[in-house]
Length: 237
Image (cartoon, rainbow, N blue to C red):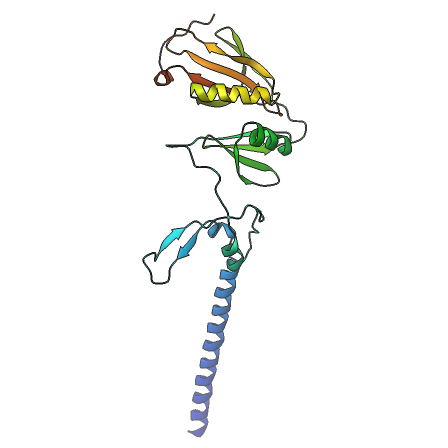
């Protein structure tokens, strides 16, 4: 009996020891997993609590633009919580468009889109930069120093219009202000600012120029904004 009792006591102590070791190991794994959460799980979000009226509300902390713009994927929770940022522009109303395009130099793209066109810069890396073009997101992707846009042409109201191209429909006032700004910066027009489709429902101001990588840009302004999508047959001149 004594031997049986001692064996039972020994087995009970062994069981308790194993349970304790297993619990400690699980706790250590859980703590380590929290310390190595991917940065994408937390960037830009902070849970505000503490028993006041703001319990459970997510807020976006400000970001100091002088700090690093990148966060390692394995950054700790404490490191991420200390990151700050600011937003320099608001999205356009409705559904802002997103347009990504190739460039041969991010430095030249920054000078052109950021300085000449006055677009506010958003996120960036060593390979790309995004900008707000009147609240719409455009992204310059570096694809190699030899890249230049290959042009095709199509006649529109007497102009040989380069394609592909992209841009915005502005107000008439914004159009002329941009034309003056671009001209003062020494940017060469492919198609000078002028009035197209005069007297027709689609009457509009238009101008074309290139970015440093040869990407074509058109900015236009309808004389009657409500006619932007007027449907009728246009006879090419």
